[in-house]
Length: 216
Image 1 (tube, rainbow, N blue to C red):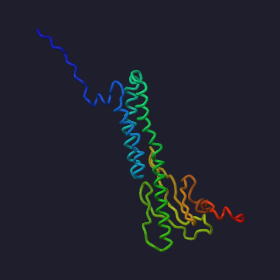
Image 2 (image 1 turned 180 degrees about the horizontal axis):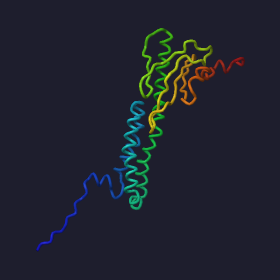
Image 3 (image 1 turned 90 degrees about the vertical axis):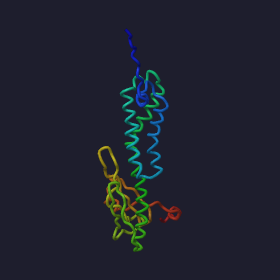
Image 4 (image 1 turned 135 degrees about the vertical axis):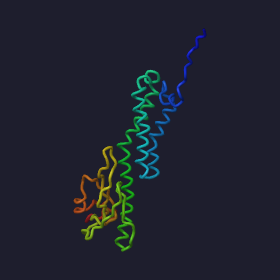
């Protein structure tokens, strides 16, 4: 009677990569690419930051959590340094959830400020130009102060609806954009309120003539 010997069936390639006995360069490269993806999106433009952050946190952070729970102890016994590098770079992807929305709204705020300055000049000259801006959750229209107070710090144009920032719990109001009579723009945190800025104006940096003139 012939006794057959059971053959060991090798694990599929995807499983050997996803759950290796010890981490290596492929796992580290995937984590590093996910970690750098939002930074690359910053160079392209603010519209790409949140999608890139979602991909980074989902793939990179998801792998980091999964590997920590499923393989972390065994990896650390077999290759401590490599394991710390792989788990560190993947888990760092979760930090983008806190950092990248703030960078996105800051870049969007500067873009809105440029549009606000252009619109204010056109509005003053009576030219018809696009008066809308992106709040992050839709488009709204700029507003001009009908009778600005005298002085270079008085507000002449502003965003009546605040720009909004992504969070894990939904979008929240982040900041307003205002433009002074001197042409200086400011990003005003939502917590400071818009009414106070409209009433008191914005600080204006002194010019060289102001600094040299002791009477000013």
